[in-house]
Each structure stands twice: as structure tokens, then as C-alpha cells.
Image (cartoon, rainbow, N blue to C red; front, side):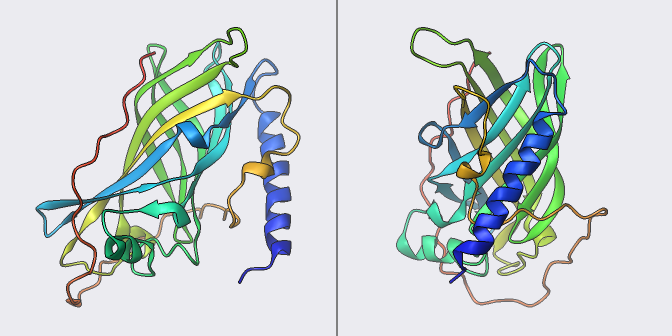
Amino acid sequence: MMSSRPRYVCAALRGLAFAWLAATVPASAATYRIDPKDTKAGFEVNFLGLFPIRGEFRRTTGMLIYEPASHQGHIEVFIDTTTLEASTEKARASARGPDFFDAEKFPSIDFRSSRFVFEENKLRAVEGSLTLVGRTRPVTLTVTSSGCVAAADAEPAYCRADAELMVKRSDFGMKAWAHTVGEQVTIRIAITARQAPETVKDPAKESPKEPLKEAPKSEQRIEPASEVPAQPVIQPSAASNRPAASAR
């Protein structure tokens, strides 16, 4: 079991890093906390090229700093892999196991933005880095809908966005079941971030259990495994509803 000391140090470093990032955006930028109760994340991958395997993560946290007038900001998203759920107990065990998300060793999927991409005042994409099973790669989140709502009465201001990205699991060392489970994995997320009541002093409180690793300078690709494994225990699940898109 991992001791609490490394986690505490990691959380403190995250707090310093986020404070530094806050200083790089306009002073008028607002700080938002991702609401775990109103944020959904999940994945989808094909089985035998025919059937979709789907799962969901029950807890996602993070921070958003955003200034609407200049379209500048930064977002960090932490998906808790230990909360992964699937259609059956065997499917959940396989998805959480070392052949796939390896939740015991890597309890978080981390995304850190580097640039927001706008077209005609619409957020279209967020470029950044994704850390999955201990490996970091550059990725681009495609944003299907987004918008912010001003504070009203007792309700704080909030921002919502629906986004997805596709990754090759072999790029992150997930090579098991290469002949039965698809190479492309789609990760979808519907985020709700509510404005913090004051300047965030300790963003590490919403940090995941494991430290973020710095993105490598160049992407290293991993060739898919050539061996033919036994049939996985993960089973295709029934189709699940995708998160509703939020209108701007």
C-alpha cells in the first residue's frame, strides 16, 4: 500500500503548479472546481470488431481557470479509475486489472491542457497531455458543446462542456488481447465546473491519489503485441446513454 507521505507531497506540488498556471492567465479569469456529482466520464472499445464494450468512471475531479473575454485558461481533469464500473463483475475486474486500466497501480487518468482552440467564439478543442497507466502522450479533446452561465441568486456561476478523445491503447502500453479487443479507445466526458467562492488556496484537495508525470518531449509509440492471447473475460455491455450535450 502506498504511504500517505508521497501523496501529500504530490498534492502540495499540484497546488503550487496550479497557482503558477493561474498567474499566466488574465487577472479577471475565474477559478472553477469540477463538480464530481455532475460530471460523467466513460470509455468505449470494440470487442471482436463488432460489439462495443463500455464502462464508466464514477468520480472525476479537477480545476478550471477561464477568462471568457480573452478565451484564455487552463484545465486539469483527474478521472478516478478505482471507481470504474462495467456491465458485469467479470467485466469490471478485467477493465480494472493489469491488462487494461490497472487501477490498483494507476488510480487516476490525468489530463492537463496546454491550449484552448476556438472557432468563431466556439470552443472546438482542448489540446494537452493525457497520462494513462503511467504514460503521458499529447492528445486533443474534441469539444462537441460548451457554455458558461453567470451566477444567479444562491447559484454560483458554472461552465459545462461535452468532449471526447480517441487514443490507441498500445501507445500507452495496453497491448493485451490485441486480437480480440480493439486498438482504438474512446474516452468521453461531460464536465460541470462551478466557480469557487474565493481564490483557490489549496487546489490539491481535489487531486487524485497518484502524482502527475511530466509529458515526454517526444511521443514514443509501442507496437501492438503479436501473440494471440486467450479470450478475455470482459464481456460486451448493453448500450448506455451518452451524456446530454449542453447548449451554449
